[in-house]
Image (cartoon, rainbow, N blue to C red; front, top):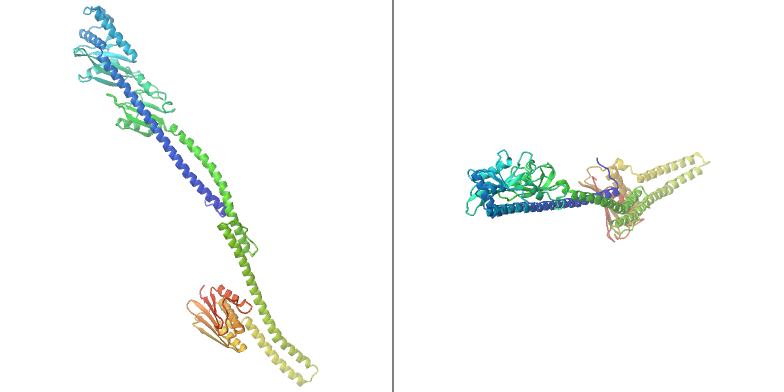
Length: 608
């Protein structure tokens, strides 16, 4: 819908408002998106930093476990226990560490003391480093025994752990030193899966006779990954977790309990990281919630794990939302201020223009006394001053025109009055006196007086016709402009006893009535001026028509006058002539000089 806007104040208000709104919108949008980009970049940098820390912690954790296992595998205590495990497996007997005392082959007190000390040392090391469990697997061809810290047990085939240990025993190759096996559930409802780390124990003779298997609980991994997230910059919705190459979680979710090996992560960041890529993107997570996610594969031997550090998109952009609200509030305040300032400025600009408009309307209605009171020195003040000057000149010009009209009317009335008084009036008085003198006279006297009065009336009729021709010559409508001008020249020549000639050239189309009348009056005024004021004895008038203009030329051989001085006579004749030419769309030029005569040239376009 188009809103009509007519007031300059309204236009200025809309202009200022539009400019202010556009400026605020551009600044606000630029500030908003710059701040948003900065906050997003800061969030990504924070996630990348946390990802690097978590990666370092997990890799260090497993590297430390590898060093622990290597230390155990090289220790004499572990070699003693491994030898006992191997021999118990070789003989196929079930016995505990304490049962060694009953064995006939180990009667030596020193042997018993060494095994007890080895057991205590391993248990102490186990407790100091927080191992979940430690197993020994004999490598004998006939052996199937497994020692769990202090007990040698026969392998129960139905047990998930035992099955995994047997898989390790069969899978471990002679060239292997340390191998890590991925998390698995020891039973179906196991909520804390474990991973196993296996190393070979070699006795002093260099014989490989046993495997040491270190059990690592997922609880230890969760303690690393599930730290206080607000302290490390992950807020209320951020989390760091591990995912395997099967896309199952390897650490506990912050939001879903018992998620290890139960929750599948099919996010884009997980796929990229498993594809051996590192980066940070915006993507839906395993809960299908938009997050910022930083991902990277881990460098742990035997484990194809990745680390993901994520925070909810909505929480990350809370500062952006606050900034947006602040920008909107500040923009609203500034716009209100701009509107107030715009109204003041628009009033300052429009009020003089409104005053100027009102003064122009009053002038158009004929009130030439209105003025614009503007005191400013800018363009509007100059315009107001020019308007006041124009009004003064229009008023002067109007007075001059009215004066010229009234003077012309008065002169015409005086001329008609003189002609009526000196001509018609005197003759009528003479006729009246003749008639009065005939009172009481005889018939011959009356007959003679009647003849004289008849001649007087004939003269009166001729004078009346002449006066009528001067006011509006009938030849203009009856005979046309050329004939009327010719009659005008002949009559003026007869009355003034001057040589006045007329000629016309190229007349094709008769002009319209207005052009005929105005040109006739111009010629009449110019001819009267030449007769009365030029002192010429030879006057010529020409009427010329070409394709574009109608030209009237009047020349005399009189005394002429200076162009700078006012025109001869009463001063209104030339002005009236110029005004009539201007109304017809033409021009009037005067060529004269002292002793050079005068030429009046009028050029009227045929088609305005």
